[in-house]
Every structure is written in C-alpha cells, then in structure tokens.
Image (cartoon, rainbow, N blue to C red; front, top):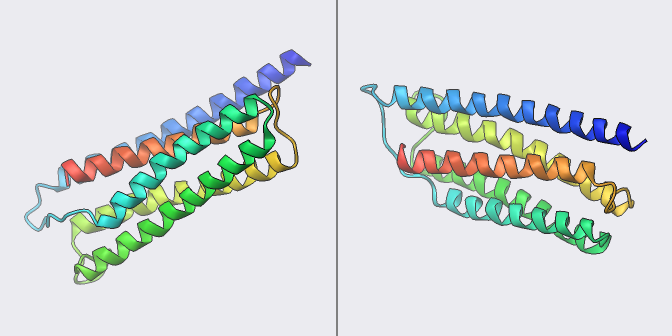
Amino acid sequence: MIMQQEVKEKTYKQMLWVSMISMTMMFAGLTSAYVVSKNREDWVSFDLPSSFYISTLLIVISSLTFYLAKRFIKNNDITKTSLFLIITLLLGLGFVFFQFQGFRQLIEAGLYFTGKESNVSTSFLYVVTISHLAHIMAGIVVLATVLTQNIRGKYSTTNSLGLELGAIFWHFVDALWIYLFLFFYFIG
C-alpha cells in the first residue's frame, strides 16, 4: 500500500511539473514575441499601472501563507492549516481584483486591448496578464478545493498530497507573475 501511494505521488507530481513546464514555454514565447515586437515603429512605451504593484505584493504574501498552511498540516493542525488556506485564498482574490483595477487604469490612460485606439505594446500586456489571470483562476479553484478537503479532514501529516500539489502550483503562478512583472517593469 505504501509503495502504491509513493507511485501515485510521484506520478501526480511529474504530471504537474510537465504542465508547469509547458505553461512556462507559453509565457517564454509571449515575452520573446514582446521583445521582438519592441522594434516596431508603432511601439508605445508605458508605465505599469500602480495596481499591478499591489497585486504583486498580495501574490508574494499569498505564497508565504500557503507555505505556512503546508507547515501546519505537517503538525496535523487542521485549524491553522485552514486559516492560512483561507488567507491565501483571500489574497489570491485580492490579486485578481487589483489586476482588474490595473486594466481600468490602463484604459483610463488611453491604453486599450483592441480597437482603433489600441497598440501592439498594450495588447501584448493585456494578453500576457489575462493569460496569467486564467492560471490564477485555476489556482483559486485549486485553493478552494484544497481548503474544502482540509476542512473535511482529508489531509494529515501522512496524507497531504493534494495540499502539496496545490502549493507547488500556487508557488509556480506566484513565481510566474513575479517574472512577468519584472519583465514588464524592466523591458516594457
């Protein structure tokens, strides 16, 4: 039975890593296209919206709270694990909120995704951030599932695979956003 559990854990983690590598390749392609497109004559430079700074802080803190949740499950403390998962979920929702505030700020600055007033540089920003938001939304579904399973008592010191997989994915989307934010901050 232990060997079967180890095989299951190894298989699930490998599948997650393959998925994350393919997501990384997608974003590498998008950011590479951004760099190449910067040489266009119609390129418009812009500053990142201030809301993106706030969302970045929230997602970094959310990785810390997920880490703490993972530590508390190792001590079989379901209550504190749930508390930190709830905080992580709220921080993730805050991230989404401030991303949309950032889109509002871009529009107020006259930087549109599509239409005659749009330009290629801001369209890239929208595509990349909306693609990342799709992954964050998947992460929020994962968080809600992990939280529900934890409240039901599914996780313990000896059985925390779902929580561990959720943490790996959440830390991945966190690191991915930090990369994208720094990319647009320094390259954009």
